[in-house]
Length: 279
Image (cartoon, rainbow, N blue to C red; front, side, top):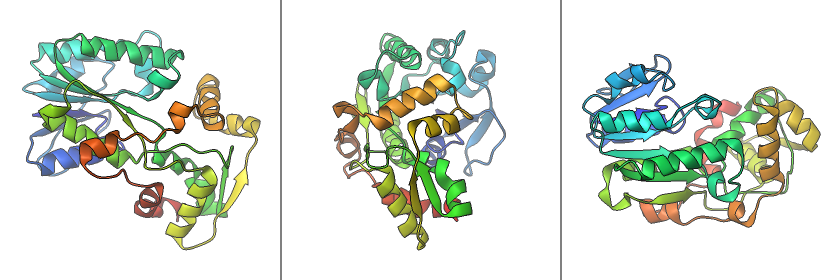
């Protein structure tokens, strides 16, 4: 049996589906009740409360570990989840980390994530670590303005990074959970090309079949908008990456293709599949 945490999100949902279709017994873990594929066991649990996770891990051979933001905050102890998994007899853990542990290792969140990576490596369990860069699904931040005004408002319109489709992250996670050959690897996951916000806007317009205008925000305007849904420090950190990506953050990684045997999906593919969100 394989346990998937964050099972109702944009990575966990397709991962759960893929594992079920592969004939695996799957336990989907989320904070709230949600629909899951037929045959999948669902457990409502908060990873911050270790006692709630124990029933989900009973009989598990592998765990996909995706941490919510509060599990990186002060007083959080995500390493305890790895210890709990080992005590429950789990043999393999696939951890969703971030490319930032390599490219910008000194932020508080990334220091904590790197420490968790080290805990997993030293746990005696089989492991694989996934380090995605920016997500294609971050474009959903623009969905409301596209629906209401046919406009994407974003900073740094002509500066790009190779955003990755969450479905590709899920596919890589499935391979790492199911195939021994990926054990002990840390994989950097990106899309197939560097794409700017202006070009993302064009892809959304193509998917919709209607014009969408790009409006460039100043950094200050973008920070004010982002700070309504995240700490100001994290907003600044995100804007640093978007405005001045390092060579490592601009690099297209071969790891998705290396694991899946195909190129990663382009942003236009993601936009076409999620066009309903922008209508």
